[in-house]
Image 1 (spheres, rainbow, N blue to C red):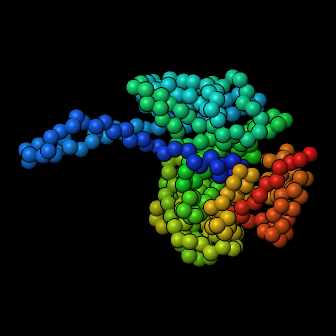
Image 2 (cartoon, rainbow, N blue to C red):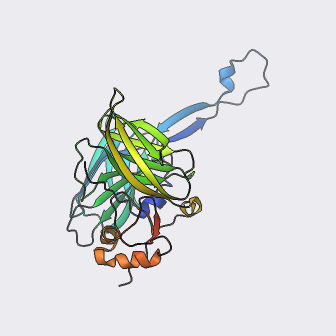
Image 3 (cartoon, one colour):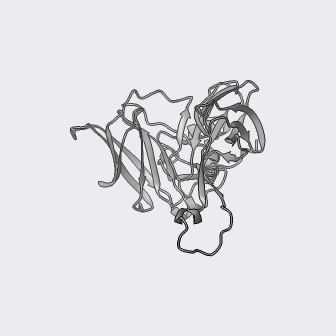
Amino acid sequence: MSTLRGFIIAAIITALVALGVFFIVTREGPPSSAPTGTEDPASSVQEQVVRSAPAFDIVRIETDGTAVIAGTSEAGASVNLMIDDQVIATAKSDANGSWSMVIQQPLPSGNIEMYLLATTPDGQGIRSKHVVIVAIPEARDRLPLVVLGAPGGASRVLQDPEYQPSSGELALEVIDYDREGGVIFSGQAKPGSLVRVLSDGSLIGEDRADETGRWSIISREPLAVGVHNLQIDQLEITGRVSAVLMVPFERADPDLVARLQPGTIIVQPGNSLWRIARQIYGQGWQYTQIYSANQDQIRDPDLIYPGQVFDIPVDER
């Protein structure tokens, strides 16, 4: 069974304020006189035009910060890749709405947030629903971590330098919180299999893995604050349980989750303080900074739980 893994950098929390996938543009009809009872009822209804937002499909960031990015948008749109208010690259979508771009100027090191801004042929500006968070090491000595985030949905790790593909094996990869306080569990399983998640023996939810093996389940029922025993089952079409994972999970205080700010992380399956410090500061031994800032939650530096929310102090060296 593959090693559980995953690390969602602090910026993903604030990234999930991106705009929605659909924008409604209304066009008013000409003013009409008072109803006479003979008008077409549809003539008094505003016409609605639904515009689809640009979306990321592929984000590949090389060790040196160069990149290949591809996705979709409205056909014929001009798509800008943005960091803050700066345009990093531009592409034009084809008749099918597909576009791609090659970033030859290396992206800056550190944690950066990217989004898409498309201009349609009729001049409408539409921002992407998703944002992409990239963590590029200062030393540029390994592949960057790349995470795709969306409001109220599970984050998806697109590129992880420490991840080895599970070859269809059952895995819990990411734990997030949505804006209503629900806990989002997502991972990998055998394509087409049914995945169910239980907490302390009670069913949280179930989902069928898609053709790539990805699944995602949101806990709609509130989970009590504290440590829970998670069980993730993979079921075949016949109903036979073919794989089981047992994972401890700590439900953070919902009030704390609602106040999440930059400089905060959600502990992921497979994390340790050493690994988190290595990802953030570049040196594992700096885990003591994280431990000191979160002693109220960390009873043992060797024992942290997925789902915990930690403050990450600024490295002042």
